[in-house]
Structures are given as C-alpha cells and as structure tokens.
Amino acid sequence: PASGSGAGTDGPASGRESNQTKFVELRELYPAYGGRDLERHPAIVYLPYQVSVMSLQERLAAGIPAFAPSLDLLVKWHMQYGLVFERRADWQTAGSRRGSLIGAHPNASAHLKTMDPNDERDPKAVRFWLGLSDIYNTPGVLLFDSWAHLLALVRDTDLCKVSQGQRGAWGRREEEVHSAWQTLVSEITGGKLPGTRPVPSGTYEQVMAELYP
Image 1 (cartoon, rainbow, N blue to C red):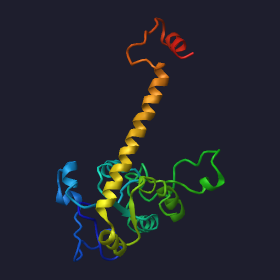
Image 2 (image 1 turned 90 degrees about the horizontal axis):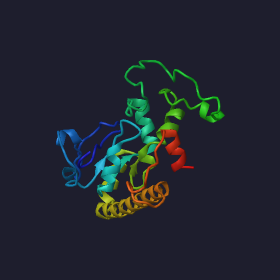
Image 3 (image 1 turned 45 degrees about the horizontal axis):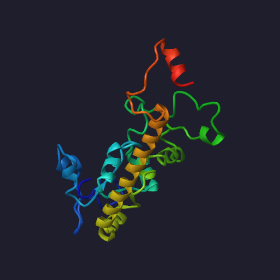
Image 4 (image 1 turned 135 degrees about the horizontal axis):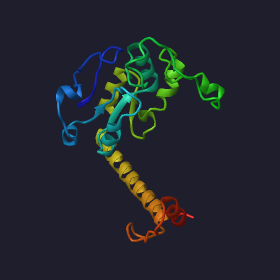
C-alpha cells in the first residue's frame, strides 16, 4: 500500500517498481501513520490477510482509491502462498488438519455442505467463501487480474475522478445510515427524545412489557 503494492511476476510479493509507479509497503513507509499521511498518496493497494478489513471502509470514505486482486487472482495466490492467512479462526493452531472440527448444520443446503469454510485444500470452497469478502461486496474497489493489469489501471485510471466519486457515494451512504438510525430510534421511543419518556416502576420484565406491549 501507500503509492501502490507490487509489480512484476505472478507472486504477491514480486516486483516493487516500474518506470512510472513506485509501490511501497505501508509499514515500511509509515511505522505509525494517520489518515492524513495516506491522503498524500494517489491510491492504496490491498493484499488482504482476512475477509473483513476494517480500514477498507475508512480509506474509501476518505476518497482514497483502492485497488485489490480479483477473486480469481486472490484464490490463486491463497492456494499457492496462503495469502489470506486469517481466513479461518483457528489458523494458528490448525496445523495440517483439513476442514472443520464439526460438520455443516443439518439444515444447510446440499451445495453449502460441500463448501467447508475451513478446508484450505479445496479451491472451490476457498473461492466460495473468499467471494463473500468485504473487497468484493463493497462498491468502489478497483480489481486487477495481474501485476501488469494493476500497472495499466494505475496508469490509465483518472484517480481524481474516482476519489471524487467515492467521497460523494460515501457521503450519501452516511446520510442514509443516519436517516435509518433516526427512524429506528424514533420508532423505539415513540417519537420522544431520549431521556424524556417516563419509565414505569416494577421489575425488568414488568417495565419491558409495559413499554413495549
């Protein structure tokens, strides 16, 4: 991340520079950093270590263009290099064990029962669960299929336009979330301001039954 992330052959750590773009690891450039530091750079490249990366939402909301490997490429890298090493909760203790300690839920579909989320040797199962990652379900992430494709995207994409679009989209999303919470709180409180509603006396069960018949 920072000015990019890597270029060259097909491995996730291959190559660091091209004639036009320099890719630097985030912690190498900033042992400690804040949002303003990252905003000095044209884009950030994610090589995810788990399926949910909290900073992704923050970077996109700040208008920092974000690149990430396509699902095909991420599955390939994970099967070859174990890139998404925190994909499973027991990654530190599983050792060579294959699959989950318990089976699928009895009510799971026949298809889902074949997709063990903890089977690191089945590319179909790995692909199924990685496809649910934040990166592939968050609007605005720019996906690349190879390092060469990434370099082409960095070279040809209007990053300023992407940044402006992200800020606008996330601004609208923030308004929608605020509005949804306001509606929910209003429904719960009956339209009264928090703290202004009289609370009846009695046991917890009695009070809840009276407030929420």
